[in-house]
Image (cartoon, rainbow, N blue to C red):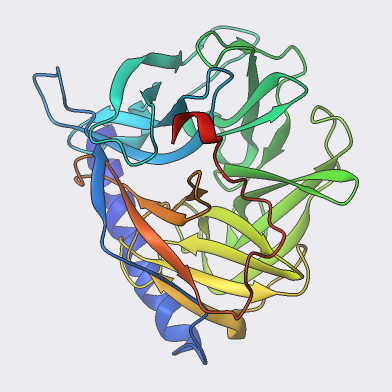
Length: 329
């Protein structure tokens, strides 16, 4: 029954995505585009069955190595059974292939964690400590939980006693964090009502990465529903005084749209400025300062990177996406 349910979930998500792309029409201008994708990591290596990577993140460790963390499972797709987070490492961002590591984290179904699955990790570093935020789910889809685990070495993770960090619905998930002025902002995908409604990107704020505010809304789509939807995998890039929101799937499973705003707290449908042929896109830079965007997904065979080109007329603006350490590039 679970497998049948997830196939219906996937089909429904694609239907919602196509409806969304028709709702706002074509973009007025293009300010960002991607190049050709190349595979950097195959999770099926060493496995008897084919495996996939879904929502993921990149972070450099204290030793200068690149680390990738992400949703993983053997094919075919089964989101409700995604109980482990993949971990891969590389000395260089474009290394082919990245090296497979043991799972970073496995689901803790026992109290007090009561996790249902492990989805969409996002890792940041603060004062020598790595913070991994991820969706732990819940038996009640209107009260999905975002948990926190911390590590000093990106290998050994400990769940935080203050979990959950966020409780929201429907299926609140896909956290992304960035620093804005003197506070942290966590964006995630949710709905206008916990029991369902317009798909949207919500956000909460914090001074200490542990205590989070009541949610506010950064982006609302015209499409409504419960699970899935076209506002997943939010990723925000600041370039100078402009903020770019990447979300999807839009225009198909392998589709991410990019919206621009003067504020990190709100984007509008009419401000569409790019479309990337990628699912669950992440943005990252190498030691030369070159920009890249990733893609992944069910049935895609791993993680891919492509050059990302900005057409907004800004040359080397201030940004939240750090240039990689020179030592490993």
